Image (cartoon, rainbow, N blue to C red):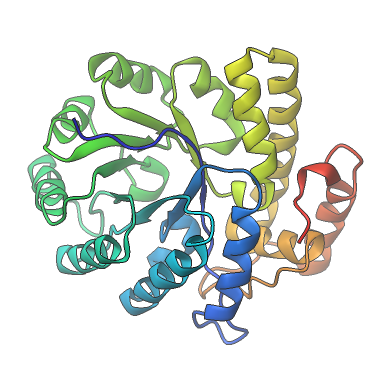
Length: 303
């Protein structure tokens, strides 16, 4: 049976040069930092990695850099390969397989109003392109529409499809899928309510804020498994407070600014047209008191 590893995975950000191009050196520094926080692995090239505004060549280069950095510790690596073009998706998938990634994942096609049949055909073709297990992706906030439960079940039934990254607040649908296809692996993608999905049977999480707060989410997962509800609540609350700031600044530009304020890692800018939703001074005024708190500082790994 096709399976993937449960646990907690950072949806790795992409480090760019000051000119907005992929930076191998900065990506190495960022990847090394994220891998030092006790997480189970990385999810590479997804929405958190700005894949929607990056070219395929940059994503291919990122796959190689991350795999090279990861050789020392051998974490579980999931390559996101969902592109508007099936041909580019297959190229990314084959490259990840060649490099030794452990699994693949992909957004459903959403550049046009694709039919359910077209989406199913996309996953069928992509999952057959390599021998790697495939993780499908439900994220209505990105695609513009939730996929119907029967369609998701049909996709999960495809050979080589091992599980799903579920980034939706529809926890009832999450529960229904978990019960209807219990042999699959279920990752939850909304960092700020991960503990709710964990209570409903999530096998782990994949998240953006894990880049900076991987230690928090590693501890949160341990607390969930230990049944330590007080610790779960405390850590989840800190996560929510951080996300509240990101909702003001914009998630990806805010994450890169928070990295600069809290660590010595320079992730570079976000790729245009992504941009801060407030002034940098306003964002710094929000981040600095939070990042300097005595209950937050120990959760940020030092380099």
